[in-house]
Image (cartoon, rainbow, N blue to C red; front, side, top):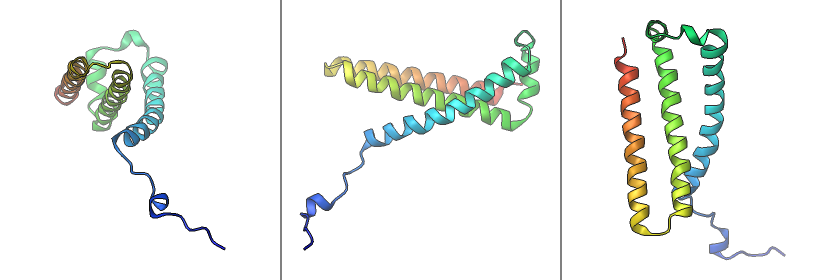
Length: 125
């Protein structure tokens, strides 16, 4: 005889923002690991750090794929770090007013860093 589950028990749990943020942290962490390894190899092992000058960066960024690589590293790094800090704020800041101010500073600072980094990557000659 089959056991009949109630309609509520048959439904899958709803996925909310926190579920997607949790999944993003796992995927972005894995992608960032490989991006950082590639970056470290190229910038610190294949090339001498003392030869990293503006002309070196200009020559490297003449290829749009390197700009895309660095922009992806910037974007994922800021989003991954910002999401981690958001989680810490949610866990440890309990007063609503303090939480609002802290998250506003977090999002504003992250947005400003993203904007400055993107402008630099797009306009550097």
